[in-house]
Amino acid sequence: MKKKQYIAIFALTFGVMGLQSCLDYDQPTDDFNPNEISIDDGDILGDIDRVNRIDYQAEFTSEEVDAAANKLSSYLGMVKTAQYNMRGGKDKKPPVSHAYQLNYTLSEVYAQYSVVPHKDFLYGSELISSYQVSPSWNNGGNSPFTSSRVGLTPLLNHVAVDTIPEVKAIALLLYNYAAIENVDLYGTMPYNDFKKNKIDPPFVYDDMKTIYTEAKANIDDIVKCFRYFDSKPEWYKQKVRSIVNSLDEITSDKKHGIANLETWARFANSLKLRMAMHIVKAEPVMAKQWAEEAVKDGVIDDLKYEIGIYPSKFGGSHPLVEISEGWSDLRLSASFVSLIKSLQHPYGYSLFMKNGGALFNESTGQINVEQGAEVIGIRSGSYIGKGQEYASNQYIGFSRLNSLMMDQAPLYLFKLAEIDFLRAEGALRNWDMGGTPEFFYNRGIDNSSIFEGQTANAEQMKALLAPYKEVAAPVAYTYKDPTGTTPDIESVTKIGVKWNNNDSQETKLEKIITQKYIALYPNGMEAWGEMRRTGYPKVFPVLNVGDGDGSLKQGDLVRRMLFPNDDDASLKDIQTTGLKALGGADQQATRVWWDVNKSNF
Image (cartoon, rainbow, N blue to C red; front, side, top):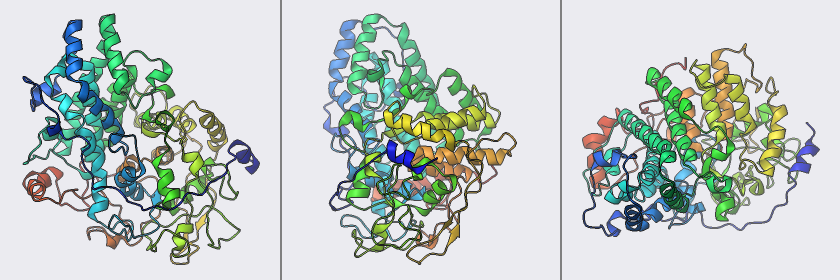
């Protein structure tokens, strides 16, 4: 492939964005406090059995539905905001840079997508190296769940929502999505107490297996509810569809004219499929059953069903643009760059071009790199400098995001590529996924780019990925730190891209997860989870692991985030039920339930 192809397709110019205070967020607070909602007489709060039950076959009059919708009007706005909060929303608004940075930096660092290139923060504690633990960073991953669940559980526990079961099913699906993301980070949580809108301590922590199995049971009821919707009277469907359209911030149903709840059903089944793969080592029989059920009933299999928050809809840009470009708070990691270079991924074809055409910019500043300016990442765990200017901190000169390519990138909850890679792995394990590993692997790559599906940029990148799929072997690459503070290291990527049926099962899995990792960017939560579960993709060892909590040895991967609590009541709850539910000490080295230390096959 000629370099000029990328210039023609992605010609860019760059503006200058001024530095601002970074980590300029408030300590995470709930946008909605359940106590601020006036509760109607007769409403039921905290009946967990009623919350879990979705009586989707019950029949109501038009007047009863209107009355329920009127009672729920303020709660429906909370559901809308809860969706924003699942990807960095704040103050009832779509995702913003400060909240997004708080929520996702640590998982992105753990996944080795990025490195924070300076250690000093005006509004947060220092981040000396990748595994240093500090409350202001560690607590951030908890905020998407905390801030979204307070917008969901009041509605879930409101008696009027039983009259509109589809709305209840949507809120329950969103609750479970956020809960699974959260428990995957920390290993346990008060899942049931939170679901029944319990506000005051003590809270009882549920073990992870319980959370997964109860979420799966919820999903099965949710899907039945959505599937039954088509059989309801036309007047009812019109009323409910209008309500759903008013609160929906994560589907493209209105754009594609999808008038039923098919997208939501596929969203639920896709979550079930993701959960199934997470537990494949802990519960292999259960994992197979869940995965096959999900696929049979319908997962995301078309771009129109993708789930995310789209800057093109809310008129903003991806928060990482400001975090990287405006504040200089993220730079690419050496591991991610090494992977891109070794496999010759199209994202990397701007390495040697001024304002070139893939996802990343070439290095800036005055660092002298052999053979001129190129993409160069920072080794994870490096001792970086202070300040956001290159004059005082040379790490600011390392490679950053190409802001114009990232500007309109969706904030995905689910993209088609992830589901295809899940199905590829399932088929590799001889599960019935509706196709072969090779088919889903190749289609996953086809739709793996950062761009919103069915757009000009996505189609152009898809064309560039066609020859990429034929890369049979990696090219030689050795990372050389231009600062001279870390040793040279040869790329750990030894596989190619092209599917080969003669490869071993382990090599095929490595290819699937490696391409899935690229497709997931910048979803560090899921990417880090897959690294923990499978050991792939292979990445450079993190330097200075000893800066963590002392539980990790050199070469170890951090296995979980520490509990995000420091108040007396929460600490007491952790001691009473949290540690037992976790099944280990509150340490970075403690494995969550599904993170079983055994071979992949």
